[in-house]
Length: 317
Image 1 (cartoon, rainbow, N blue to C red):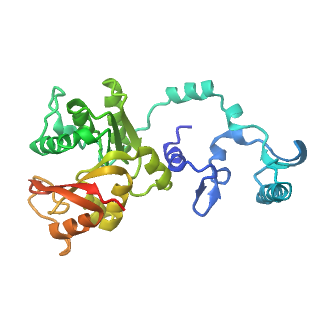
Image 2 (image 1 turned 180 degrees about the horizontal axis):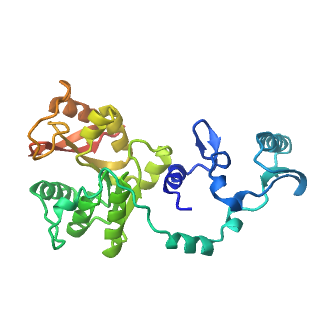
Image 3 (image 1 turned 45 degrees about the horizontal axis):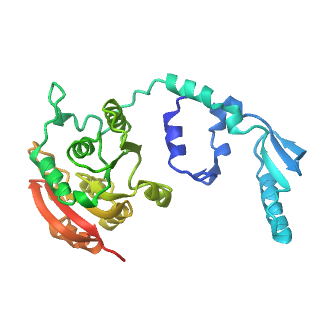
């Protein structure tokens, strides 16, 4: 049905019995209502034979089936499900792969404006050539200094993938993961990777700070170098995450190194005449001291008026 936001919520967790607030299961969330094919009956079975039929999902039947099977398993020491409570058809039967593929490929992407779409367009000239700023060239040089120790890189909040593609073209690093929560930015990154046949550049639509299954997600995406450029000031001053929470999240996505930018002027953008007010505690010293609680500081360098880069190595426990 092209319900993009319902799809995104479903994809935020890989738990089989995914729940939503306040602890609803998928079959109770309203997702069934947009899929008429799922309006089949539920069967309560005993040894494969139908004992009871319900029109809608019933918590009591599900509870009895699960608990009874557990007791039988404890007594017999055999994992043989005697009772079952399930829909009459499986999802694979209701939605054959070929049919689903045909439907999905025919869908038109919804036109949704987003806050950070087009953020990287300033780096490209009218004829499509890339203009590499001194800041990014310096970051490239820093990464090349540890390149021999890197097989993979994850760029968290990487927007349209400007840095990932720069590294892809100028290093021998084998795998790149581009993460952002702006659907239009991620779509541009995906299309760019696809057009250039960059099969080793993966694009992921994800909120780096709010990921339900963070352990499973980090295990899949963890890379030798985790990068977070021009994002900590938004997380700290706008969404008000603690700096320790940000560093904890960056650490969990890295095997070895992190590169993080600090914006000493806060939310000020180049070209603006007025400087937004920043808290007294929001200082370079404060950022550096907190950084060194999580990482061994290797490099600390000012790149621009509002860009200070930190390169660190994870402190082993």
